[in-house]
Length: 493
Image 1: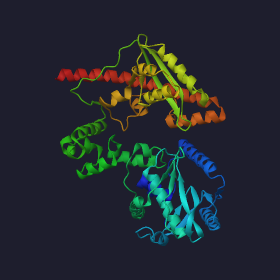
Image 2: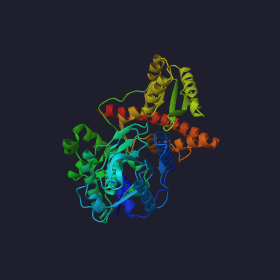
Image 3: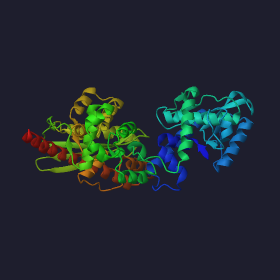
Image 4: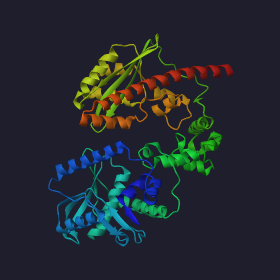
């Protein structure tokens, strides 16, 4: 069996994904453009780091893994100072000299970003190599450390010398050194678990984790199985650890959790959270919304003649907020007009932000509705970046009303997550482009900047307008639901 650093990374993120990649031929979903974009960004980040700090490197020729491993080994024998995009392979017997586990006849494969020559002794001569793992993330995640440690032990097996602590290079070129003594036991446990899992005849149990699963090519396969079984991971708030707790109480389905008593689950999960989780399962099971705290009167949104609903589109790689969309609603005549402030080039961000600011200040008494905390963070960030008067920012933020915050703190809905698109779709609102979402809009903006095709920019603007209208739709429904539910509660008391 081939045990690679890629397999290790996938197993660390999702055991089922690693199993399916190993045992089934082809994932049902095509790779999403956003993943392709991330891969390209990662490649540019790696190239930039290497060209900046190791300009005299030698890049291993792309090709078949065996050819790459042979070329990498040849370069190490020659004592090349820096080897970029190499490939290392060793057998289990060689790995056993460093890791206390039975590696059998497995083949271990790793692709370190960089191999840098250091003083020392190895089977090649009076030198040895340290591996450097270049990552696009902003912090040294546990999974990065685990992969870097794995690469170090494969490298040590080939060099026949004690492994050097590897470095992780992050997005800002900051280096983080991994302590192998700290990671060795964890790596042994992970490799043992991988070998055991891959030897099974059935894949590990499905568990839908929205952030990690959304970009996986096995998502539709796993989601179909979870939906068919009404798996508890479909309930917002059920984490793997909480799921394990619930299973000890023989609660393994949405229906079982919906009918469970919070007293039964409270000792393990905490009584307040247990009641909340049981209500969420009940909303899904009975397909109806609930007031989260029926004995507490819901809040009241500001009463205003003019309301503004806005949404931001951002490009994280370029660190730019490039579209500020505003829906102008006049309640007396129930009219709504959309205005988009677009940075057609990255260096137009400041002017776009000022145009938005001037527009909303034209209506100083209008509440400004948005969905999520990102808009608040973006206003603060740009206020600091462009050295705005802090009082202007403070005054602006006092008008902000986060619909998401008010919703999740007052209402439990029969949905699997509380994203704007999920909630608005549940209410019957439809986006004009069903493919549009935040990730796709980032890709469209990237294409616009590279190709100049205005169609991409127009699709982003339409998507942003639909986000604003969805926020308006959701706010209107929430106001009506609060009123109806509160009236029923008062009548029954």
